[in-house]
Image (cartoon, rainbow, N blue to C red; front, side, top):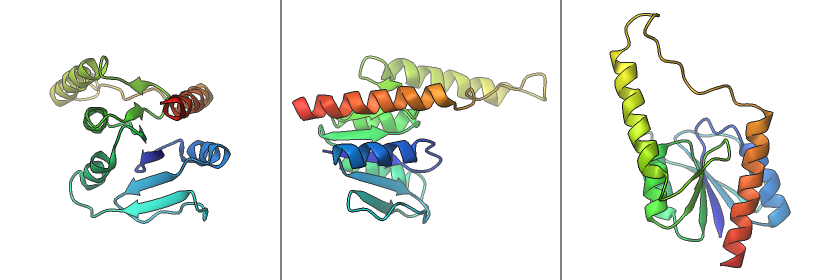
Length: 152
């Protein structure tokens, strides 16, 4: 079992590290550039090329039914679900086989709306600011995913 993290702009890395220390589940943080991670045997860093989707490709290739993937990227979530991984968004929202189709459709609709927005009157806002409730929800979801994998 291991936790794979789409490290670019992941707001819950510190929470993931704390859970990893407590549960002794290894973590791999994947990104396109060098970044700091704690010096700990459970924490690994993988720096991929800056090619388009290089981090996503690496994570998807490493995903297995014994993986927990943390990402906000819906298309990466879909690829990891197909590999059998448990996938969580940084807000604690799980991506599931039942929900991923709707998430992909919503993503496409929002991209179309943003592309058609003109000027400040038509601007489409992004996600709500990340807060304490999101962190709490994420920690609960990560704990639940680890328990689920331990039982399987």
